[in-house]
Amino acid sequence: MRKAELAQAIASRTGLSRKQAMEVVTAFTDQVAQAMAKGQNVRLPGFGAFSVRERSARTGRDPRTGAELRIAASRTVGFKAGKRLRDTFSCERG
Picture 1 (cartoon, rainbow, N blue to C red):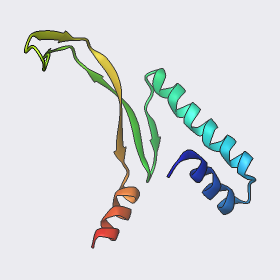
Picture 2 (picture 1 turned 180 degrees about the vertical axis):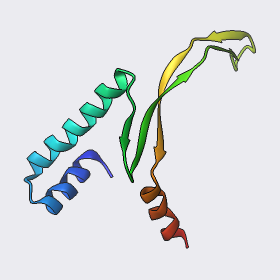
Picture 3 (picture 1 turned 180 degrees about the horizontal axis):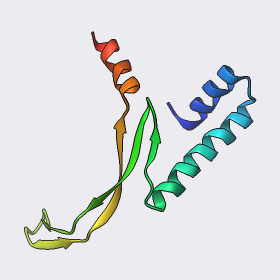
Picture 4 (picture 1 turned 45 degrees about the vertical axis):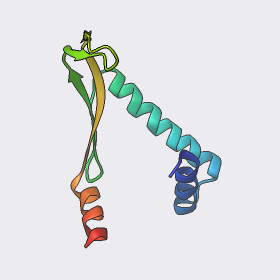
């Protein structure tokens, strides 16, 4: 599902216009991104949690030459599904 499709689904479910629903989706994604940029985790009970994960510096290899290279420490985004979301998938399989 793409952003426009998500906005359309929200619009049809809530009675908002498609434009208003798109603004809601955009505001949500912007707020999550801003919080994570500040190092904050975002928890949505039942859905899941977005977290900032720290990757330590490490040594890697150039696949072409085999030479060792230093990979700098970095931050990345993680997501862990909540129980309700996980249960949705387990029901579909069985």
